[in-house]
Length: 336
Image (tube, rainbow, N blue to C red):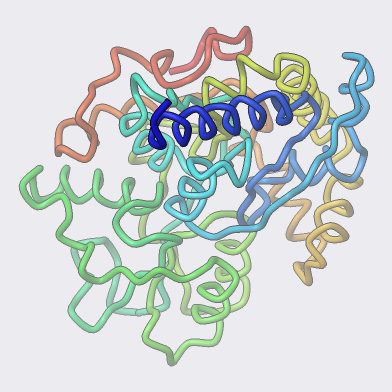
């Protein structure tokens, strides 16, 4: 036997030993990426009440849950594809981006919506009444400039105003700023940030905290009605290889949404406690009870953004419907 042959056999033996010594990861590990805002309230409730652990036990497993706080869809997608998390929480825009990128490979798809929430583009510049009024000196804060769901909604609104060729006309004015910092800038005034496309409760804090703050754009007006802008998603491999963990997670989300609807005051307290938030409790309750806000799992009015992103070349694959980029689960049967 030659020296090279012996070396190759030794390498093969080492690889086989490693394969035997390293069993497939058992069910029960769940690392979830969340971002900022009350749109993640269902996750806050699930954490506080240990609902995932509860439903895991109903499946006969112990689930170890870890929450990771990130900002912006690109950071969340990177964490998902690197294996740092099992479940990603981000906007529909980032979901569509990673669905398109992994189609035929990791096959990332949506698990569920976190609910319907109107997202407001708020400005403290008195000269800005519509998106057409933004000028070179304005800066629009979004979680991830050009690619966050807020950015995509603004691009869709721009395309309708100026045509598809100028869909990214306002991208040059965008700056990537986490929601808490952007809200503070709008309330304080006098910074380079003159607008913020955020989410609850930051947008409501801005409107309450600065008399010059006003709504320039409402996501519902752009997307055609109440819409699920923020969603949860995972790889096909995770769903297939961890059916009990996956079911425990979905069942916990459903119970969390039901809890919020039935107990808005308790849910508000959980948000304040879990996020160590200084948001006014009455303002928070007003958001939770807002008839335009709905805590539910079924995605709604996401396809307009998908069709637009394909039209402008942001994604290569055109989904036939929302069912293409959400897993085939019962709560997604009416996804649109």
